[in-house]
Image 1 (tube, one colour):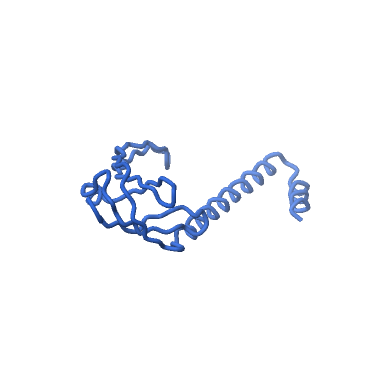
Image 2 (tube, helix red, strand yellow):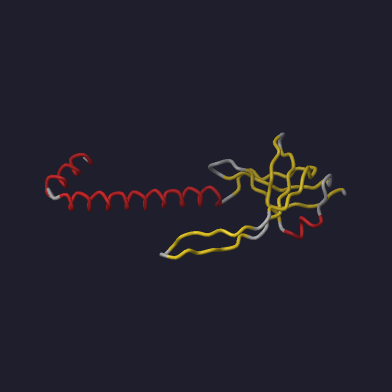
Length: 139
C-alpha cells in the first residue's frame, strides 16, 4: 500500500523539485511522529509507580553534582541556560547500588553511613527505580 502510494506520487510529479519536496515533507512528518511517540512513551512510563516498597538502607555515598552552563542553538539564536547543582545519594536496594537525586535540605541532613527508610517504586515500562520519600532512622 505504501509502495503503491510512493510510486503514484513519484509518477505524478516527474520534476526533481516535486520529488525533493515530497521527501522533505515525509521526513518532517516522520520526525514529528517519532517525537510524539517518544513523549507518550515517557509520559506513560512515569505516570504511576508500580509496586511501591519501603526498604531500610544505608547511605553509601553523597555527591554534589556541580551546576553547568549549557549553550544551545534555537530559533536562529544561541541560547544559554544554567542547570543548577544537584544533590545525589547512593545506597543499595535489592542488591544493586542505586543513586537518586534529593532535595538540598535532605542532603544536608544526611551523612554517609546513616540508616534511612526509603519509599520507592518502579516505573511502568522501563522498570527504573524511582524514589518517593526518605526518612532518617539511625545516625
